[in-house]
Each structure stands twice: as structure tokens, then as C-alpha cells.
Image 1 (cartoon, one colour):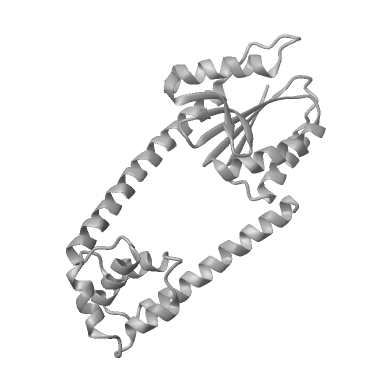
Image 2 (image 1 turned 30 degrees about the horizontal axis):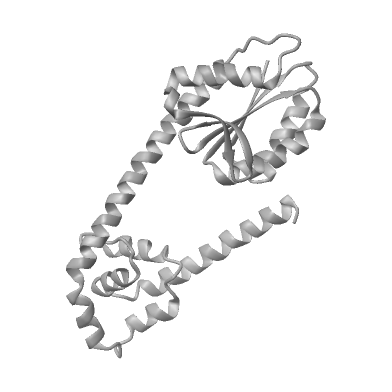
Length: 245
């Protein structure tokens, strides 16, 4: 399957999910707050009674396991009262479980904020990175210099060199979700294969930086712009390209 077909399938999948969520929202609006709360408890969706109805509907609509048919059953007057009674007995346990879920979500948000701070720090380092380059300099020499600069900024324990990823071996990883691919380029003909690498890495990491060094000064502005445009066409909005010198 080509990269274009993969991107097309991914777009269709996202569109279908959005359509399904909108359908769930439409039916969920017919339920009372109590019915929404019971439904959330059954499907492990993190909601609380302090939330308003709109917030509950929004959270429940994200649950892919929740079918429109199930929601309509809850809206029906013929829904068995005995089932509701059984659910109420479990309220305390379910509220505890939901509190645990909310706590985990808060921890996740804190982690993401930390990754964002890494992202900004990495970007600043890459912008200012001015390596020592000689005639016989190789990529690993530049990588070593960059690793040292990053470790001085974000700490040695947060920088991994030659990190193995699902789709290959990424040059540098900062934190868990910021990756860096460093390349010595001497011709635009290197860009197509690099695009494939970046596509794979972008599926696994939240942010990818592609740091390029034009060793022969043979990359023209139009070549670089075309490379960046191709990345955008591939939907790689989380990939940032930086060229030196």
C-alpha cells in the first residue's frame, strides 16, 4: 500500500469516527442526566454528577463501544426498572473507579505539559545549534555534538541516542514523544526516502524535528520548499524541518 493510500484510509477512518460520534450525540441529548450518568457507569466513561448535561453528552459520545441502539434503549420508557436498581447499588464503587480514571487523566495532562516544555526547549537548541563541521565530518559526529547540547539543556536522563522505534532507529529522542532525525544532505534526491522515514516516525511520536545540514550547499530554496510541501500533503503536521547552514 502506498503512502497516499495509507493517508487516504486514515482520513476516511477519522471521518467515519466523527460521523458516528455525532450520531451518538444526537441520541444522547434525549436522555436525562441520571440516565447519562448510569450509562457512563456501565461503559466506564469518566463523568461526575457535578458535570452539566452537555459535558456528559460530550464525554459519552467519545465512547466507540457505545452504540446508538443501546442509547435508544435507555431513552425508552420500557427499559426495565430492575436494571436501574441494580446499577444504583454499584454507584459508590463506580464513582470510585471514575475518580481513579480522572486522576489518571490529570497525570496524563501533566506529562503532556512536560513533553510540551521539552518540545520548546528542543526547538530552541536546534535553532541555535551550530556544529563544528570539517571536510570528513559524518552524521554521527554531528549527532554526538547535538546530544551533548540537548543533555546540557534538558538533562542527560531525558535524552536517548539512537533510540529504537517501531519503524526503525531514530537518531535522538527527548522525553518520550519528541524525536529528532539529523541528516547530512548533499542532493535533493535524498528527500524522497527521508519523507518515508519521517512518515513512519510521525505515527509514533507527538513531535518530530528533521534537522538538515547542507554539506555542499546544493539544496536550493525551491528544493527545500518542495520537500516541506510534500510533508504537508502527507498530513505530517507534527514534523518540523530545520535547515543549516
